[in-house]
Length: 103
Image (cartoon, rainbow, N blue to C red; front, top):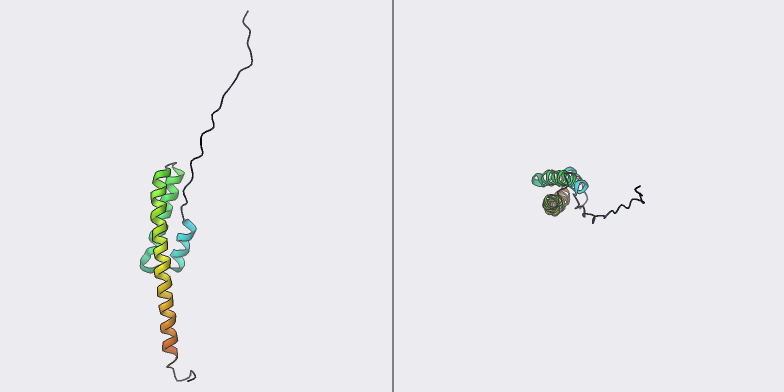
């Protein structure tokens, strides 16, 4: 006769792989509002590539695309802000010389 005892199962939980950020919302905002020289659209394309790599479980590839998207987003915000400030200054300067605006 063979005696069967309780079955012991061991489970080793793997370390969770940190998921890199993909910056899709920031890129979408820049595409709509700070799309100077199409930098917002370029950032959005890199963000989508980062998200695709993240879904494909390639954290190294996702991190590369995410870092590129972050740098392009920063550039888009900086250049877009400068352009908006210059446009406001030019608008104020040009409206001061209109005849119906006060002295």
